[in-house]
Length: 203
Image 1 (cartoon, rainbow, N blue to C red):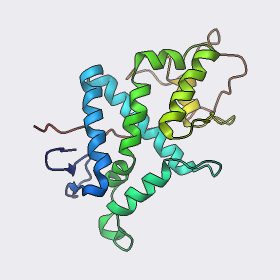
Image 2 (tube, helix red, strand yellow; image 1 turned 60 degrees about the vertical axis):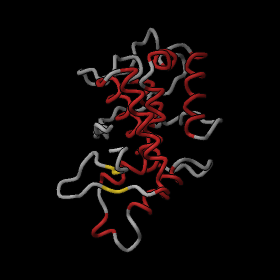
Image 3 (spheres, one colour; image 1 turned 30 degrees about the horizontal axis):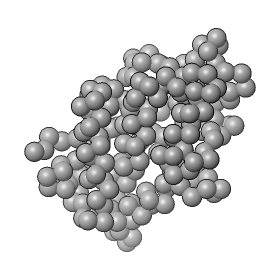
Image 4 (cartoon, rainbow, N blue to C red; image 1 turned 30 degrees about the vertical axis):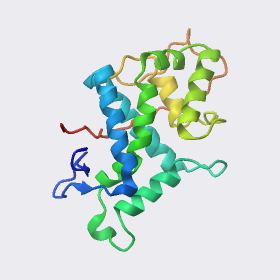
């Protein structure tokens, strides 16, 4: 997004203008500054991978909406209603605005999935993995979070992606049996795709 003019510009939708962000969406602008800090710290490829992973996790959680704990989907829905007002869906709906609604939390998760230290903990032993899961729960606003026994999006990332180098070109595969902790649920493989909201250059 463009922080100078407070416009959301990506990922762009064909034929759709940039979306202005009012003060009620200041958290999206703030997330852009965190995104830029990740870029400076980790570089383009790793940050792209991390924010994309954050979007994918947010998308799965938003679709799932478990009822047993209040989660970030309440914030996503509030932002989505501001970006796409009721009654104007036919003209205002766009995938780009849906990305914008989840952007702050996607960047927060990227700070974990992009960090070599946190990736190492996610791919480590049971004690290290508990540290990683606790941090994910803190960032999601759910300190007691535990991955679903059926394998939610975060469990899938831990099992299939955390131990791979970021932005690898090989298909996701489960970690080697020698490092897989006993009793860790192995979710069914599934392919995912998506786009990252690349920041614009702003002074």
